[in-house]
Length: 156
Image 1: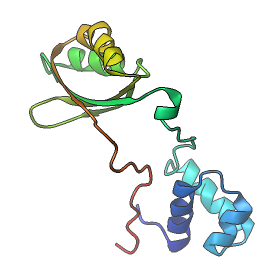
Image 2: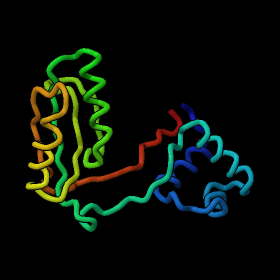
Image 3: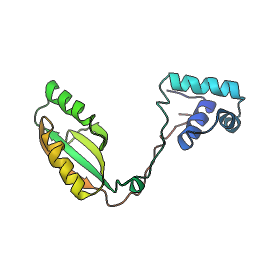
């Protein structure tokens, strides 16, 4: 999708401050409030802006361990895939799930309190999901870069 400079500026500002008022947003992008609001509503209604959320510090809410789990399933038939994908959506510890190419079928990002909690999560949740052949886990030692803002390629 191609955005004009106003839309691209609106999106950049919103990615860094989702609570910005329409007045402040309009001033920053160089529009009056009404046209700015119309452009923002168009971006929301078009699904470009999917929603707004507060970003929490995992450590401060007791989630000190981030684990990336590479999951391999037993069979690649529709029933196994649907069962697995439906099951992962029901567990809040699984923040992200991607279907991948390569030696594993899925990549999960899991946030839990500590290694003992992850061990219990593995045994009580992941190992009992339908169609699991194997799980290889990688614990993050520390966060080097964390961004939620998507790169907007202007002029391309």
